Image (cartoon, rainbow, N blue to C red; front, top):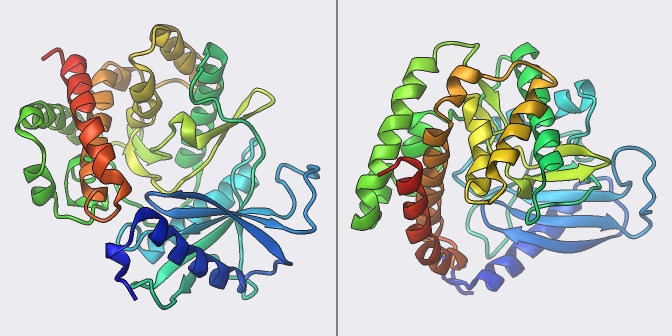
Length: 344
């Protein structure tokens, strides 16, 4: 049997599909169909029970689920459990829907699974399926406004929620964005050594500027707290004018401005960027006061997000065949964007 790391992208997906089928025997499900979604950070499948209806009895689609096979060495068991704890609390407390965790037949939220052909034991989790639409390409002002409101609701809950004593998530600080705290497979020093010379000085400048601000805010709970940390529009559904956040896999502690920087990083070259930015802030302000002093540095954190993304591409290209070409394509573009953001 060929080693897993020597398989093609499709070969890895086929092996992980077998693991998914094994995992689902531990959940209280009827017969189901399995639809592959993505093999990137985690590997995800849509699970649809054969007797499921597409009619919506509550905020979820009955009999529809998202199965996540968590990438090894990225999130620890306790960090995954902490993410699911926050999701469970948000599902109970918020006026908007989030993906509620679904337990195994043994009432566990985390399921370790091991099969032949996949070298490591993989942690799996199952989430209920949210209906809605993605708007990743044609982004309008009302999408930004709705996302701002949802972001504010998450920040407000984060500041008020009493976290369990065992709660642990990574920090999106200088170490989490640019160092060994980022969950990379490679050591940070090795990652940075792989950054092309044409990009290195630009990326280093962005990392230095962001790190200075983070150190100023990190010990102030009014400036630094639990974030979603990945609210780009690939992780947001829209339903009846409300933005519904998905994929809390990267949730962690950081300055509030980082949550703004993530979607803005994808929008900053759009012709309607100013309108999108203003509506994002206005939507946030409809719920709570925006972090104005941090937003003065938003371009620095948009640049920091792009640098972190570049490091992620380099890291994933070492273990996921699909990312080799993506890394070659994106690194020059990301370098150009960071240079522009910092006026270099």
